[in-house]
Image 1 (cartoon, protein in one colour):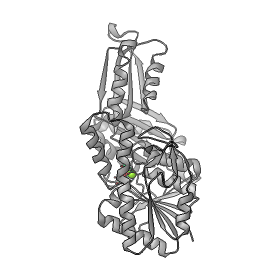
Image 2 (image 1 turned 180 degrees about the vertical axis):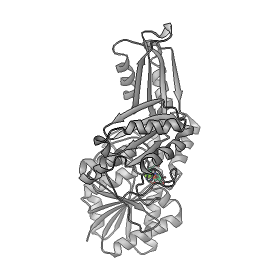
Image 3 (image 1 turned 135 degrees about the horizontal axis):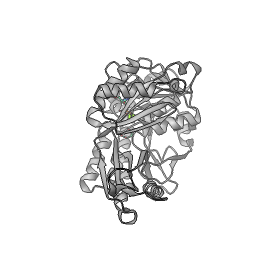
Image 4 (image 1 turned 120 degrees about the vertical axis):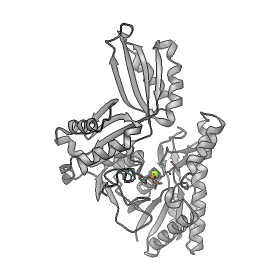
Amino acid sequence: MALIVQKYGGTSVGSTDRIKNVAARVARSRTAGDQVVVVVSAMSGVTDNLIKLAKDLMPLPNEREMDVLLATGEQTTIALTAIALHSLDVPAVSMTGAQAGIVTDGVHTKAKIQNITPRRVHELLDAGNVVIVAGFQGQTIEGQITTLGRGGSDLTAIALTAALKADLCQIFTDVDGVYTADPRIVRDAKKLEEISYDEMLELASLGAKVMQSRSVEFAKKFGVVFEVRSSLNDNPGTIVKEETKTMEGIVVRGVSLDKNQAKVTLVAVPDKPGVAARIFKAIGDAAINVDMIVQNIGHGATDTVGATDLSFTVDKPDLTKAQKVIDGLKHELGFHQVIANDKIGKLSIVGVGMKSHTGVAGKMFETLAKEGVNIHMISTSEIKISVIIDLAKGEQASRAVHAAFLG
Ligand code: ADP
Ligand code: ASP
Ligand code: MG
């Protein structure tokens, strides 16, 4: 008898018919003699809709209240999934994140899991139940409802797998696995049989929303091997695990496009020590993640000599908050102007094989040049190259870069 954690994402539970399909799949695993813990997301569109409702009321809603609101999405699905299992005569009990023992810190809307005490989950499993846990949510030790950042049900599933010492973790979604690029953008993207944690982590944090990046980070840290596969067929999926020697032979494993970034530029920031520290301390204090940072001393126009233009990127939903923080520093720092641009995309190529190959950046930039795509910012690491480009050219550029490296 194995203990399996199965996670079903928003599309996979997007209607009562889809929930019936999930119940049937879970029932099958259970008939095979396995214990099953099911983690579900909110029905597709529900979380976006709740956010929209709150933003109709005010642009920057209180984050504690956002968590109370957003947690309702998953709470609906756990109950419906339990009811669907009952209709098949399968004993099943739903649990909120808090009831499942998921304790987080108090950073509302992007809380981190601190520990999981799944005693009650074990008890219910041992009594013969399927246990259905609400993804994406937890509770602080003080009892405040929290959520784990967008896509956070993946994290719930992986963290529960580790805490329960489960034998298997399956992430069921609406594609057959992890592809060399988003199959909805690049039609000839290929499904990967396996991928290393590091590559999956880069792809995920660079916009491949098939896995939440924090969940992959967690899986790597605790050695949780997991499979990404479809809830709509029985095709084998993609195994995500520690890097093996053979993986290094491939230079580029995948291409990703992040449409969820925005760029903030501070024009003519005085060039003196401590300025960057001041800016990014304030941004950090507001719990805003900064990704790329580019700074350059202006040598051109006389009024900008001794001043620098400083650009950085943040997640699009944090743009209003970032602008507010930066506006608050204008008087103190004395820069000229802030420009915000949310019409950008980040295109990246990822592969552990890049460590041992040269000429990869040149080939990527040449491909973009041929497509007439202008590059705003560049950043690289050992296993990835990312560029910020105009959003309007993002998909075309993805296809061209995919064809150049993986076609
Ligand atoms: P779920 O609701 O199951 O969590 P998501 O919508 O979060 O599913 O993630 C699945 C989607 O991720 C797919 O529909 C696909 O369009 C997108 N995606 C982006 N990049 C990739 C990739 N490299 N491989 C597979 N899917 C990808
Ligand atoms: N419902 C949440 C979201 O849409 C969490 C998840 O689906 O994983 O982000
Ligand atoms: Mg998801």
